Image 1: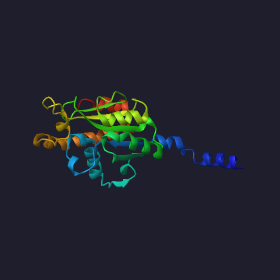
Image 2: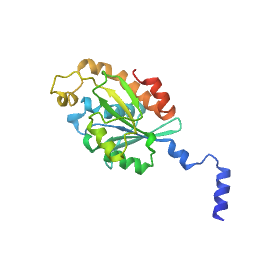
Image 3: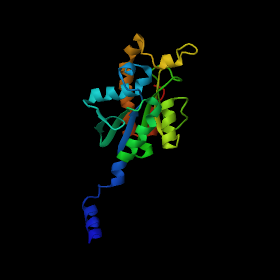
Image 4: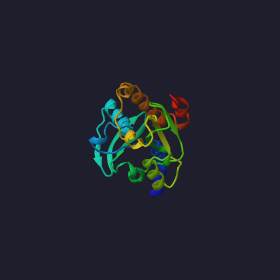
Length: 210
């Protein structure tokens, strides 16, 4: 009888497919360090991009387990925005927890991070790759046990003298960079929306290098 009910229910509601619903959910993780000390630093660009998206769309983050969370609905997709509260070096713990809790498939994960190898404001989307010496990516790779996850790299350039890398990434934006950031943040939001609606390949073709 129960099997018959399921068959009748599915015939009346053919669009209801749990797998399909799962494929429309995305976990967008902005990497950064918590606290006012780090708020405007280059290393916190992941937080800054998600904060900008929340501001534009009128979203409010709530502090939950291992991070601050909010949800954004767009064109039938659900974007779960996560700012881990674990500090950068333990980002993987929060990523794995929320992927499991929300049943997010690996291909629907997008991690936003700063990148010293790209010019300031350049954006690059990739479906896999090494951690590049980035401690946040290193921990995510270790927790997920794979390098095949999507990452959105935002260029902060390498304009620092020898031995000053840590000071540079944990330093604040210059006046010139701050002037250019709003347009770059808007472009970053467009990339996130495209990732969820047009797919990674189309999004890479549209945004990489811009």
